Length: 69
Image: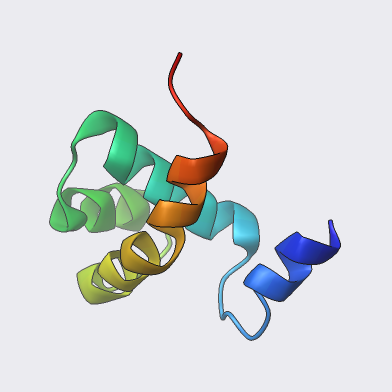
């Protein structure tokens, strides 16, 4: 849990929001603007460039944790 806190320290959004967006992008081959549209339908306004930065920052970490079998 402490590593999660360090990884998301100083982020504007909660770790669950960030991880879910990155996971959807990686798993379902959605583009950033599709994710923005999905979030706006849920009342959350996030720029596509923010999601892109999250994917670049947290994508490799998720890739190393969740190795497909």
